Image (cartoon, rainbow over all chains, first blue to last red; front, side, top):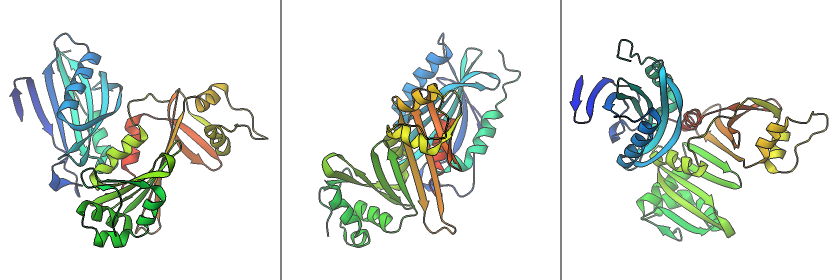
Length: 138
Length: 208
């Protein structure tokens, strides 16, 4: 499914649907999302920092746990982990990989109930490691 | 039976720690009798926890009892005071991250191994030499004795045979983060990043 939004192009590519979900009925449904947005002249670090600040304003009780350089789809990127509350009370972990490509900022976001983070770590690693932008403009 | 100083808005009771500990000894009774639903649920968690967390960070020692619905958190404060928090179970990881002060930190630069007794002495600030052992590397000694935060979380799961006990132990030093893993009488310090520590902390909680 491809959606065009005001902020740019957004591609919804995958949904993680593990069995026996914690909190499934309470609005913390696991999902993965790949999005693209124009970044202007901002470099990778500045764009990620700005986006994290904006994201923290949209999330409830957001806490940045991890931010470090990382190879993403064979390119220089950034890996972040943010914790926040869904429905104001449920613990959710948002793991993201950020990179710049052809003037756009690409973000792979994987959101999981925190209680599922350890069990689903192999799935998340597959998603991140399997991100392939081969053929995309450099 | 009531809990003194309990604020239904915040879900926290503030009172002398001994008083709160005495109340927790009657948590089963409180879970039945309390007119505060939030407190009753927390006392039910304390009476029949799915897991019990022991959290140590520096001199702070907190205990948290968690069931699938709610949690009770006991935190000693200064001057013999304490706080008893009534939480929803889903909020516990966020509270844990706050207690541990988790945030982006670099990994330590190298793995290290040293006798667990020496590590304990260094972290306690009471020396760090043991007869028969070579002096530890100066850079490691410096990292372990300057501006270091040491924390550990132990989780004991109820109703499992054999009993399940999971632990995460971390040293946050000027050199960066180490995950501490025991190996017989040694402690192995493995460079770690917060994302890995978070996965391990999440694994302390039973999923059902």
